[in-house]
Length: 377
Image (cartoon, rainbow, N blue to C red; front, side):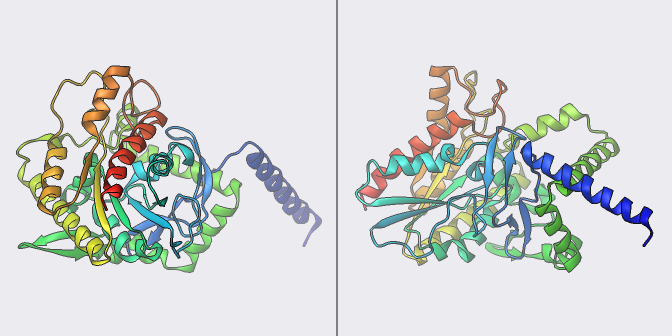
């Protein structure tokens, strides 16, 4: 090896180390938070950690079992009542610090009213459909021996995401109706993305990115350029794309009564999955509760429209299968009007995920209802 080549190698390594130290000092972090999953299509990567700043600002840390929560023993103490909360990005709540997430607020409130010690375990995953939540419950949640399962249902995108035709996403499992019977479609395992994830090269590249901030910076630049290229190819203006990303509850079709045929089909699949979830919970001698979350447009202080068709429909489903349903939208809207407050978003748009105030209100309202349910057991 020539001296010149050795000098180049030493210079590159030195520059890499200096850049790595600088990125760590300024708190830059952009790891892969998600991983390919053979059961649910994708899931959180165990022990992923970083700072989330795309919407809100939080320290985001995943425990060793792959959930955004403190670590919990799988063996439940005898004097504890455990509540497993399953849901999507509202429940994962990476927009706020863990102490401000609604399920943390809910746990604190419940421990002031219940006789037993209450543990609330968070199983929320960003981007999850009700189908994925059911599979997560069936295959992983029971390891923690919950006494109560709370399904946090977001009408804004859960109905669409349960329909392969409407969602047009191919890396996740779906249920579909075959006559009156629900059947599982796991064709995502045949996709190129899933097959490549099983190879050592894919796993090795993710390992490198997750351990070096410099590689995370390079990866972020690559993703940004790729997104810009796709937007240009699809002729999407940046402001339009930002508007789409700002609020996960943009499916206005869910408020239609009656729904269009393709949406009625999606609703029937969704209701079928919730029924299967109830049967699954009952088979483990646990209690099942549904909480319908809110969409920004429903609970903006200026809203004067009736946008509660999804709440009424889930309420009727709950009655038919004897499952309690906690409905947040009316009380959120009342609070928003009285206080002239936006409970969604981190600016004055009223769009996006729950902010700190929205999480606090949700945690308090759900806990109030759950206290009565626990006392009646």
